[in-house]
Length: 166
View 1 (tube, rainbow, N blue to C red):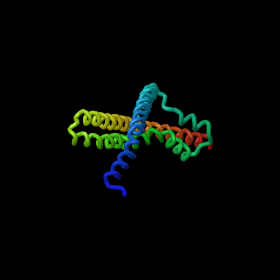
View 2: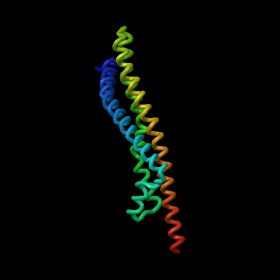
View 3: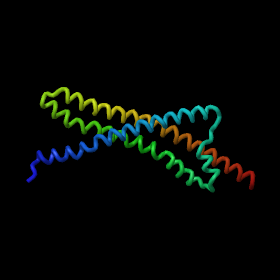
View 4: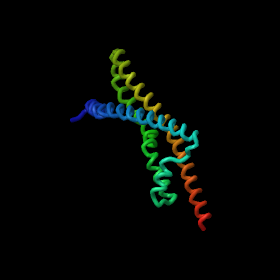
């Protein structure tokens, strides 16, 4: 017969398996976000130089497009950064809660070194996750606005060609 204590131990062991994957995903999210922020700064510099057209315009030229098709392309283009901005805080919570169990057990045993070690992991995980989430959210919103501005330019060009040609 399984006791409550053994069930708790099994549940903790299962949850602890997810600590390293959560930390690795947080690191991936942070690296991806920093890369995306750098790309955003580069694109910002190009926009200041007068280049208002990007990959969306290239895609629109290469395909027979409808506005809805271009909106779907925009959604696909922003999907990863959107996921990073939404999922990373949850990963930070996971990376915080898993080490808290051993930290609390160590506290009850007056093992302050183990408490400190677990708390460092917990706070580092959530801090990096929140940095990645906030940066990726900013990048997402700026990118979305730029892409929809570009979509509007494409639509205006199409309307002016229709009026000129018709």
